[in-house]
Image 1 (tube, rainbow, N blue to C red):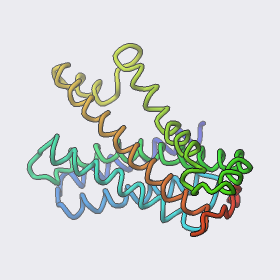
Image 2: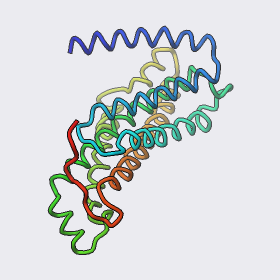
Image 3: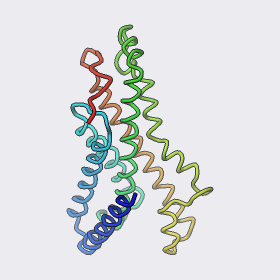
Image 4: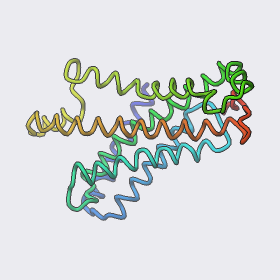
Length: 228
């Protein structure tokens, strides 16, 4: 815990120094470069934290994170924020951090739950395949279970909002002098984007990884991937 606290403090101080420089320069190519770096680092962190391994896992995680988080970030910047210029780092970088960070957690949860359930229900899946089911049909319940598991942290957080706790973005805006109702509107928009990004990333990684476990003839390759 002490090591994590020290590491967090050092990283946040370094991030604050970098962000101050980026805000002063405000160049679109620097902002885009930082977002790309965040996406790559998020996929790397997910890959390093999960235990199971498949041949194209790192690629699939990167595709899922870029597709799910990137598309939602573009939508919120253009359709909701509508700031000019569009590459304003005061908006893109903080929003990207929230969206990518939450999607990263959802990706890891979905992946781990899916692979563990495949391993536990190997006999059931083999039986369904022997009876003529496709790999999508044989793993549909595992797919749904893992997809639901990826939403659990967001569901718990949303259930407590306004009753037990006030979310960080809303609290920060209120402390800075923003009207509570305006802050609430922003928070609702952000939560919708976070949940949407989580759904896209989780579905993408499950779809891509499901194919990794089966041959083109719908034969199970391995339901117990190698450990890292």
